Amino acid sequence: MNSRPQSSAHRGYLPHDLLWGFTPEHLPQDAPAWTVDALLGEPPVVVRRAQGAADLIAVGLRGRSRDQRFASWMPLSAVQHCVQPEHLVSVPPTGVQVQPEWPLFNALAQLTGPLNHMGLPWGITGSLGFELASGIAVTHPASDLDLLVRTAQPMSRAQARGLLALLDQAPGTVDVQLQCPMGAVALREWAGSSLKVMLKTQHQALLVDDPWAPEPVAT
Image 1 (cartoon, rainbow, N blue to C red):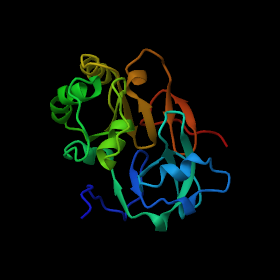
Image 2: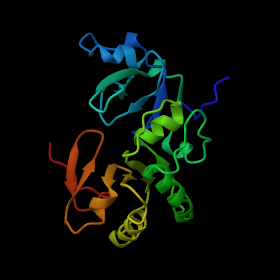
Image 3: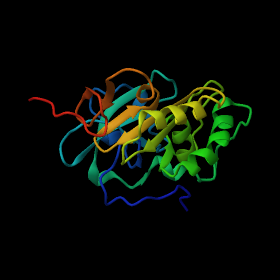
């Protein structure tokens, strides 16, 4: 029986979602050799930000080392199931060897309560998200803790600074992306003093002064 958490697959898939069903047959001819080996254990691939044909999903594959990353496209029809970052907050770490002395595990334990109290959907991305969802060990003692906070409504810069201050009390490095309706912005950047911040959209990266109401781009 598959013990991975399930999510509904009838909706559009979002950046950082993990998808199962990508096989070597879906690789392009110019894919590096390591990608075939990386897919032998039927790991998930992660949805990335890119726009393609309606029946294709932009995904990224990860190999054994940090330099092994490959951008590809997955047929929508090949998706078997999907796990979102927020589903990993409460998932038992089946097959994952929790290392309480490692900063990222320590930080997650310290931040889970305050983040839940915040009242916004949040989840785990990056290497720890991949490991929790797949059971494949990819984290190490120096791994960052990558988190996603879904902010359908604007978060003020003062609120962002308060959240950042909370994260900076945790051990190790904690990186948070704020998922806005039109894209994502780094919490640390939104909490900073720059008038404009980088908003990563499905099509391109934009410098905006308000990630929740980006100015239209001339075409």
